[in-house]
Length: 135
Ligand SMILES: [Zn+2]
Image (cartoon, rainbow, N blue to C red; front, side, top):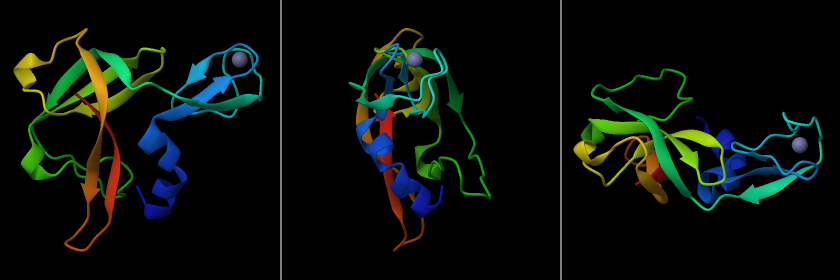
């Protein structure tokens, strides 16, 4: 993803911030401007606790090239790594890398916590992007 896009997403990336519908209390991550449950446009920022459980996961054994630079780029030194769908304690699901956990210890239903980690580093003096991962 590009730098301006990252800046716009800082609350989301750094604080696991999504939105909560003021009408029906539905929670969204990433945040939405319109509630898909009741159609309300009255939503407020909502910060998730960062606790969740693994719904499903896969082991990535080769580098995914991303010419557009839009998606998460995992450095070669971190391969293989675990990519999981995590259901937050509050309900929404997200896709993320699982870190600090040997792949044999990852299982469906495993409880995980958010950690704040470097996601992408471009070049020696390049841009370093940080964001959420789970462990
Ligand atoms: Zn709603």
